[in-house]
Amino acid sequence: MGVLFKLRKAYLDLPLVVKMILMYIWIIAIPMILLGINYIVSIGGGLERQYAESKKSALLQSADFIKNELGIVEFCTSCIQYNNGVLEYIEHQDFSTSDGVAVYMETVRPAFEQLKSINGHFESIRAYRMLFDGMNDIHYVLNASDQPNLDLLGAMNLRDLRLFIELEEGETVCRLYKVLYNGKYTHQIGYTEVVAPFDELFGSLGFFGEDECVVVGGPDGRLYRAARSEGGGLYLEPCDAAPQMDHCEQADIEQVGIRLIYCFNRMQLLSAREMITCIAFVVTMLLLLVVLFLITYRSITRRIANFTNHLRTSEPLKPYEGDPYRDEIGQMVRRFNKTIVRQNQLTEEIRQKELLVGQAQYYALQSQIQPHFLYNTLENIDMLIAMGQGRTASKMIALFGKILRYNVSRSREKTTLGSEMDHISDYLKLYAFRMSESFAYRVEMPPELRDVSCPYCMLQPLIENCFKHGFLGDIENPFVHITAYEIEDRVEILIRDNGQGADSEQIETLNRALQSGDEESASGESIGLRNVNNRIRFLCGKDCGLRIAGGENGFSIVIKLRNARA
Image 1 (cartoon, rainbow, N blue to C red):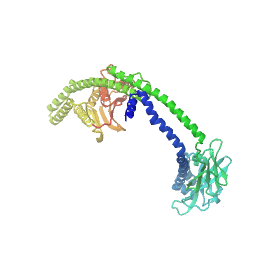
Image 2: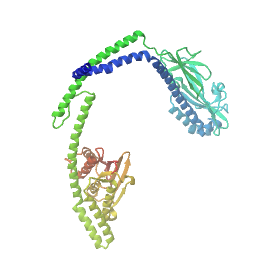
Image 3: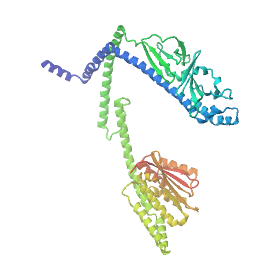
């Protein structure tokens, strides 16, 4: 026990670097060497099985790809089978009559050209007529006598997809046929032909290596061996039997009745000499890793110490610029720098927001007590009372009271779009009472947008601009149209009038100023627009705000908001 106690104390007294090296040797180096030897000696069989399974999986994946390609062929034949216009032409018409030409040009040719454009890797897609011989046909619909493989098709039914393989020097062509029935499926009227290069349909078989081969058993019982051309494409060569190798895996393509045979040898494991070389290499690498571990450890402690010293001495906290590396410590330093920068930005944004909120409150208060609006409204009410139109005067007083009540409610910065649209409807209705039948307005909003959050009192300054600047001249039948609508994850509000408008240069200048948010250069005519724009951007996000959409025939403003519910 005394010896163990002394050893424990001696270990704990060692420098941290030495303890980390010892821990590295006992926990990583020695287990890695033992596991490596065990892997080479005893896990070879498992690797061999995994190797064979991976080869089989590659074959099955290739077979699935070929089935998908054949599915495309069957889709093309189905498109022809289910096209009544094409079936009618094949069974009863040809290109020798005007009716036949019309049907061919309007129905048959577009159908085949569409299939060919969708499946450009097919050489040709045709239909052959079986029931009538000698009829006048052209490119896409031919007589059966024009097809040399007709006597080889034999008896086929609705579900058959027949494959013929044609061998040429360094190239293989696949011809696939399927019977065509009339619209009621009572008798055969022809068959479809899809011609494609072997490399297009069976190109996924190119996974075999130099010492491996893939044999294709054709539907006629013949065997073909896949080979690569100089350009890298696949073609077939006749062969008598599959080669004798350690492993042979098979997969069937039921659609066309062929079998794929993949032959390969077993995986070559390390010899005894190679094993010794590998172990020596692993040991050498582990020794080098010990040195690298020491260097890395010292660099980590020094960097952590410098960063800790920066945190202790920096007041207030500033970004740390002394670590340019991209490892975990570097990521921590960059995250710290981003946090500090973001914190400073938020502090500045809060300061600007408080300033803007104060300006907005001042502007809202100023717009509430516009003498011109107030006096004209009261004079209109007095005139209506004098004229004996007490009911109309009462309605105007009620609307005026609702508008004042909404404007003096400054307990919050945001409201709902429904409340804002109701307020502006009252505001426009009051103007409609004042201007009699010469003014028209329309406010439209889907009910599902009523709960969308928006800045308080954002529409009234914009509508006031319509009356202050847009309707100054002699505008015949002035109108204001407000529409709210939803686009993806945004809500937009379009305000449009038929006032004096603005030229393209003025609109560009306004949009540039709204985008930059510059308040210093705001003129008397645009300060209301910029104030509302800045409030929206600070309360809803920088991707929101105002945009001038047009102004030659009147003026149009688009308000972009987030689709966030209050």
